[in-house]
Amino acid sequence: MNITRDGVTFSSGKYLSANCGIIGLSPTLEVSDGYDGEFTPYDEPLTREERKELSEFMVAQWTKYGEMEA
Image (cartoon, helix red, strand yellow):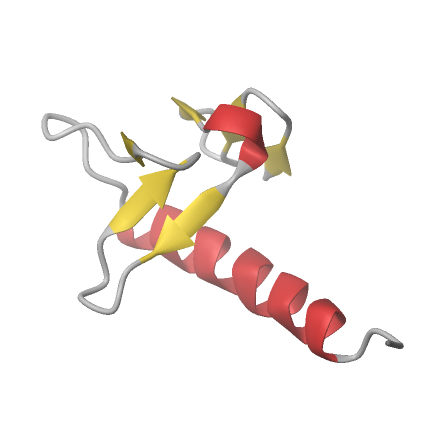
C-alpha cells in the first residue's frame, strides 16, 4: 500500500483519493479522507483484504505516534 498527499493505492491496485493523505476512522467505523470526504465510494467498498491492509498500516502509524519523544 502506498499513501501520498493525493490518495491511497492498495496492493490490489485500487486507488482512492485521500485529501492531503489524511485517512480517519469514526467511532462507528466509518472511514473518511481529508477533513470532510467519504473515503470509500458507495459502489466500490473496500474488500476484506484492503480493510486489513489499511488497518495494519494505521495501527503502525498510531504506534509510531505514541512512541514519539515530546
